[in-house]
Image (tube, rainbow, N blue to C red; front, side, top):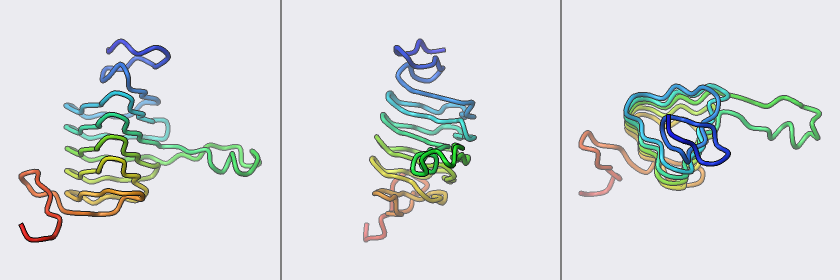
Amino acid sequence: MAESARGLPANPYNAHAWITGEPEIGAGTWIGAFTVVDGSGGLRIGAGCDLSCGVQIYTHNTVRRCVTGQRYPQVDRAPVWIGDHVFFGANAVVLMGVTIGDSAVIGAGAVVTHDVPASTAVAGVPARPIGTVRDDGTIDYGGSA
C-alpha cells in the first residue's frame, strides 16, 4: 500500500491519487499523481491501462441535489466500465455512466460524456472521435499516411 499524501486515503497505486469506493482495477494499470478515481457508483478499470496525471473518473454527481435546493436529496450514481489497455491523457475527465472499449485513447483534457468504442481515439470537450487506434498503437486520423 502506497503511503498516501496528507489527507488522502492510502492506496496501492499512487500516494497522490484520490481513490474512493471500491473500484475494480486490473493488473498492470498505472495511475498518475493528482488523479480522482471515484468508485462510489461502481467502477471497473481493465488491465494495462494508463491514467496520466490529473485524470478524473466520476461515477456520481450532485447536480440535481444542488440545483433543486435539495428537494431531490439523492446523489445520482451510474457505473463506469473501462476496457483493457486504455490510455488517458493528462487531465481527461470521464463522467458517470460511460463505457470505454479496449485499446481506446482518450486525449489530454477531453471530457468523456458518452461511450467510446474499442480502438477509438477521442479528444475535445465534449470528447468526439478523432481517429482509429491501429494494432501497432499508432492512430489513423483518416488522412493519407
